[in-house]
Image (cartoon, rainbow, N blue to C red; front, top):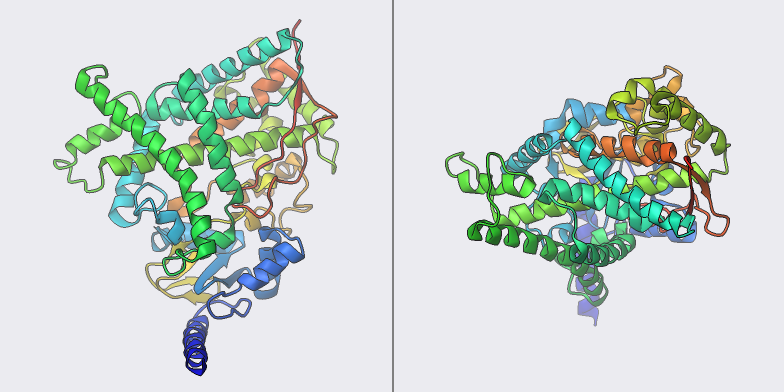
Length: 514
């Protein structure tokens, strides 16, 4: 017994000394304990004091500064919580922060494949290819507008059927999910979901939502050394099972495409018709082009990244948009809605859908969504869809703020804190698009798509989806209001998860035209 106690104390002492030596080289932060780091303090803040992760991080930001260190277990994580230091690090010194620091659980079934978790040359190849291919298939062009509006009209057709049947109070979430899902599917697979795929999509979506909803910061502590312990093993299996279902779904679609090509049912001409075609062309030409990372598993994981990221973030933004539109206890949203409607109707005369080319003529609507084409919107700023950002690894010693960050340190610009910085965003949780009209260029600090070399590559698609769909064309075609029996809420379904999703609600739709 004494021997076990002695061994235990030696292990704890080893980790404590190692942690203290490393801590001396890092920015200040709360004092960590061996093995668990600051998880006990984070647990106290989030579960006892009922604070969100953003609020907990804000307390440490005020106490230790805008560049500080917290420990998730034995791993030190540096957070940058202000805009100017974040830009200086992630943009001006971007190459130093290009590599992703990947939690063990994130990479367990991916093996460093895909756009999100790959590093080095494979990541450079995959990101460059994805950007080029997405642009070719419409991002930033009028092609994508046509695809979005086609799906939007399909949604309106479904709404019309329900209104004809006398249903006015409608749960919009399934409609929104299929809308965004089909837009992304058209880019990746050049098709809408058929009836069978649609049913499978909703089953997968429900399971993915449940897994993502339950996934929390504490799951980042799951590592190779503890994953077989009972509690950690069960958590890992639950999360990975749902992710594997989506991966298998995508793999089957890729394999079906290859079978169709072999049978002559699908012919790739020129650059192909979608992301999968373009990737298969690269696989065929990879030797002559001196490419190293183009294989079927990399394709499946890239599809996984694009479909999951594109679906989850845009869909959550769309749902939050209508939540803010229908209910905001801090200001008269009716006034904002009326002003948006007036502006949109004056531009379109109520006779046509809104187009991307109308942007210069809709300044207030732009402010409601975004102050300029290149910056995100007040809706997303308030919604804080991603409470924390994944960390990156420094590939050399680098200065961030007043500190020298050692090579190999995990570090992230925490966008949710940047976008709620009271120094710039007064009444930070209040929805107020007019804050962008005061000439202070606050829109530069709304960095929802991230900063630097790991910024979201789907920004053009999301901007087009949000501008055309979120409010504009819905408000041009319908008068929307809340249902007193199914009201939206300003609180997320789960404030402890890795993504803030709005609670379910209904929208009352009324036709503008008889």
